[in-house]
Length: 407
Image 1 (cartoon, rainbow, N blue to C red):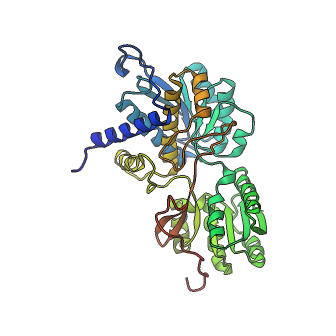
Image 2: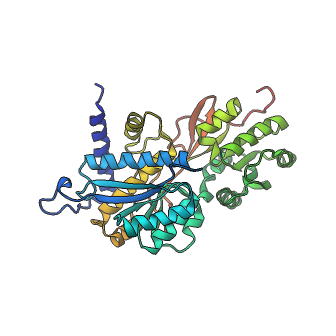
Image 3: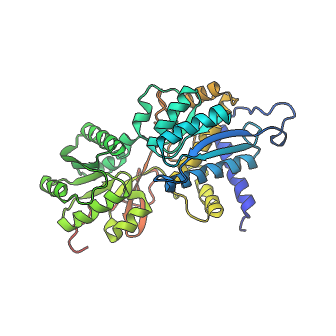
């Protein structure tokens, strides 16, 4: 029997609530004697979201994840017995604006809790304000490790940091006896961190670094670099690359007949924009993914179904990490047994909780996320298949990658 939207939402809400309680050891709420969510003032949770500017596409998806979490939380009785009210302001994709707006949310609007903005640069800027004012931030839209290298005590990651993005790809290469590696990356903060972490992990695993080079942001021609890669004859080529440069590299590899056994990109490969831009050339290409709709994590199928009904389009990892940020916000409050910010901060620093993301929420002493485990995807024709790790896989990897001639 097909469920109504209300019944589906209720099922997801009950499951998410059970997950949060299990993660927190069943900590009691803070509703008080005779208190109900309907006769108390709402819990105000502030955030900035890029609804305009360069980060607007990702910001919109993260906002939808936040809103779905809040809606479901309210349907099952609210947070600590109080309804959730989101206060989200447009930061215009500008770091300075984001920092000022977080100060406004806290100092003028008097929000009780905070969720993070979308993008690394905005999160880094905003966290200076939340740290100064001692508001724990759930950084649902960022993973640049520099955010956590400032000895801050009030910012907590949701998914893996940049340095570890390609670890699963290297593990896949090693398991297929591919050890000669080339690394190229855009010369900006996040890709540089990804490349540095990849080099360190490759050396730790005994791989041979055959070639490494950076290319400029918004590059339109990388043939000179790729000719050097071709001369180095690597078995594996990984790119610290966003969608446009991942597409560019793929197309110019074809033009130069630069063949490798495994090709992967850190950010670009897992997105639908990559396969749209690269077309048939995307076949066999791999990359890490912070989340996929096929993952059998607790509540994930229900999340995907309800999200699609609510927003009339599919979620991607940015919506999923936003939703997971809400789950962590809720689990931290339940573990603290309070909305007191210091108690919540202490709870978040030691919390272990399941979300819809693979792995679990767990952070080190700096707030860096250590429990999340990215999936490794591979495009197989028009299908995006999870090929590693084995516990998440929906199919087998197709390796080695065939040569471009004849494709």
